[in-house]
Image (cartoon, rainbow, N blue to C red; front, side, top):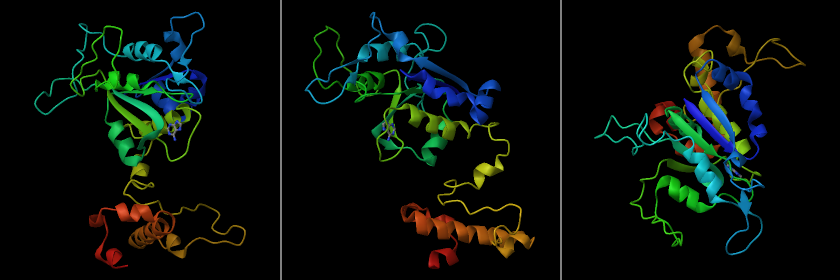
Length: 279
Ligand code: ADE
């Protein structure tokens, strides 16, 4: 998988050189490049922001550097891979357009299902906004969706709906506000990257973890069996694998009901046994 990240604070993304994601990069599983947005400015001061139209607090990221930055990771038109719309069932040879992910508290919420979905992609591009965000026209241009205003630069922005160079998704880490997209990118790249084949040493651990089946994971214990007066559940020492699996399943359900009742409401009822449905 290829990932490009654009930020005015590329140093913020340094942790992506560490641990499993760093190793995946070294092993060639993940081709991840971090770019400084200021390298795509054309003025002496390397300006990336300006005051908002309509007034209000803070600054807005200017569209020009973003367009140059994002264009720099697209295949060159007329060379190599042609730039074509997303793959459709009737056009299976067309390469999919890269997905442009714009971290934003105003986006759809990132979850494990989205991590799985994005882990299937060939090319992800992350655009880290700062200040009050990125000029909305960048997202419109990237997606090829209609423009809200009339430009006076002589360029006709007319578009048919989704003929831009990217598939665009605004994605939120959760219902709180960060200072910029970088921390969200760290979280998303780790969640997505660890799902790529070969990144996590034992793929079994991906099956039993929280959210893999819509439930929270069961509690785990290690040696010593008695610690500060606390033992471990007897069943874990029984050697009876069916009983252990049953205990763990019950713990998953108990925890999920207690901590995240919203997940129970969203659960696919077919994954529950009759007994579980009855309780
Ligand atoms: N940028 C600022 N807040 C954010 C959030 N909650 N999720 C993703 N990106 C953000």
